[in-house]
Length: 283
Image (cartoon, rainbow, N blue to C red; front, side, top):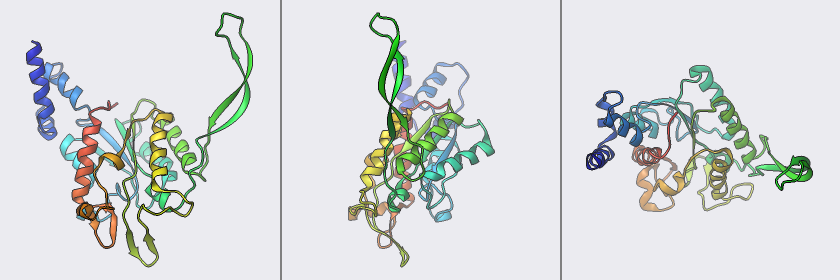
């Protein structure tokens, strides 16, 4: 019995996701259990928040987006709300739109945001403010009593990067308490020279407030710990690095747009995201 179970698990892990989705299995069968465990996102309803890299309107039919590949491979129903140029302060609006259109009928939310906050030179800010307060405690066998201790409180403000993230993730936790929210770090940035009034230097330069892209990426990772949300570190695991000339095969145009992944780059993103999702339970 153990040998058969191991063989069955291996078979499901190696089978293409699309094939698994195309073959419905009887309820409560052993294979159904294994399928649910190894591919928990099959057929789920997933919202995608973000900016131009997620926006279905950017390049239209010329680029197939990462969420569209996931739709093909996992049979998900994507609810896509990303809009080109938006920053973290747009996530509450995208959340409201999802709520208005689908209510609680969503199994997961994926957020890819932050590259425009960096480009616009938004200050990083702090996660918490601190102040002394009185708190009651008893942990030594003595009667409970009051002590003065430092307390930290999340900063909710629109003027800093971390303040914006706090606002957005607190709202998502409140509106979707049982729905997994998955954060993704911004990708590496190459030169984007769209026109004379829109030239965005590559990531080797600090932005207008003196920060490198790393600070914005690391803040997303920290947000995962603060708000108990899994993080897919796309910057590290996507394999997309436009600062290397040979890697520009993954981006829209080597001369003018080393920022937006083309279909090949989006497919690579999708493969990474699909593998990472195996470790994260859906709703």
